[in-house]
Every structure is written in C-alpha cells, then in structure tokens.
Image (cartoon, rainbow, N blue to C red; front, side, top):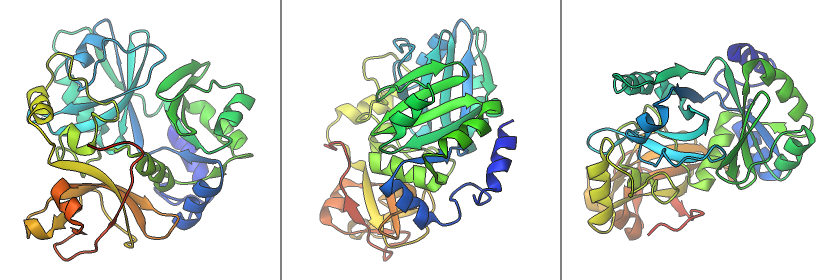
Length: 338
C-alpha cells in the first residue's frame, strides 16, 4: 500500500529516491519561505506488542520506557555492548503496542537484533512499513492545516492518535503524520493545496537545524550516545537500570568532559556521504570524527551535523574527507553543548 502511494508521487516530479522534487535548492528555498510537506520514506517503523513489550524495550534501550505515557513521544537508542549506537528511535505507545521509528536502511538489521532478545518474553515484533505511511509537515501554517483537517496538533515531544493514525509533535512548527497507508494519497493531495512538496533532503535539513541526528547504516556503531548529544536532547536516562552498553555510556558521562561532540556546520561542498571522516591538524592522518548527516542549504552548499574532537573544533581547523579537505564553518545549535 505504501509503495502504491510512493509510486503515484513519482509522477508529480520527485526523483527516484524522493531526495528532492527535482531541484534540492528549490526545496531548500521552499522550507525557508513557507509551509512544506515531505514523504518520509527514509524512515521505517517497527511495532513491538504483547504483555511484556514495555519491559522488553525498557531493558534494551538507552531511555526509560517503563514511564512512557500514552501521549508522550520519546527518543532512545539501541547500543552494542561497547556503548556504540546501533540505531536511534522516536518511540511512542498505544496501550501495549510500542512503535519505534528509525532509519529505514537499518530496519531489517535492528528487527533481527531485537528478535534475538525475545526468548520467552510475551513480545511480537513486526515491520509496519507497508501498513503505515509517514508524512512530514513543517512551517508557519503546519498547525493550522492540521486543525483545518480535523487532526490533533500535539505539542513538542507529544503524540496524539486519530482515527487512522497518529500525529507526532516534533517542535519548532514541525509534525509527522503516521497514517494508514491506504489513506496517505488522499491526505497528501489535501495538504498539498496549502503546503509545498519537498523531498527527504529538505526534511533532513530541518533535522540538522534542530540538531537531531539520525543514525543510518553508514554510521551504525560509530558513536556513543553523548557523541551525538543524545543525552542533551532527551535520549538517555541515567537513572534506569542496565541495558546493552549502559556501563560505557554511564562511564562516559561521569568521568568528566566528553571529548567528542556533535556540531552543526556548513560546507561549500555539494555532496557528502554519511560517515565521511573528519580530520584535524592535531590528529594528522587519524580521523577525529565523522559526518552524521548532511542536506542542501538555502545558502548553497551543504548544512551538516558532524562529530569531532572538541579540542580540534576549538582550534578552528577541521577538514572533511581527508587531512587537507574543505574546512567547514561551525554553526550554532539550538541547544547548549557543554
């Protein structure tokens, strides 16, 4: 059902992978100047249900799942035993069903990994990618459009169900509509009357502006949560019990200043892959970090999130791709990084 909707969108000008509507620069301008709508086909959904679903995930993820309210939206990560992030999620619950949203290219790997922990627990895992579609809505009129269509308008990090799905409130005038796949095409057409379509890259640009990382296959197992500021944006609980990698994550937090952090930056480059190495003069041929994600900028070039050794950033000269590569310009994040 989702594929039917996406195939219909391709006839309206989107490129093959929905990265843009044909011109990334135009998409970036649309985001800067108005209200936009995006097909979030780069995101996948795993649903975890059963009597033990909450306890099961609470014992595996970096955040507290046991206290998750039915109208809350929460961030969390699944780590390996060394504390490196395998995947990060938005998660929400409806009774005993917990929904995990993650990068689609990681979904098969993570679903298999989670399945290994089920054992005798009363838990069932399912890929909801064919039954649910994800649509992003952002901009000054986003909440008004939701209200006009009779949808809820949840606040930041809140979610609210409606007859055929759920609206997620991401903050900063941004929402996701997770809707039954068979209803996606009609909703898209209705919202496009007042919102301009953009591709995934433009939506990724909004994530970058908000300092919200998405771990993909290219960056899987690259970072401990603090390297991508995950404890600063509500993705880690230091009060809950053990989970895979918890000892490393806790030690990183309590041993003093965190050496590597995530920064927002701009580069004149027009292409940059997730996971591209970051270098600095003081580390020579050894990488001091990596690119988390990038997207076309309204200024031209790319905006990006990168992880780098903080001392290298403070020295004012880090390089992308190789020790003599382009020097990005560091931009402010909307939250404080200590």
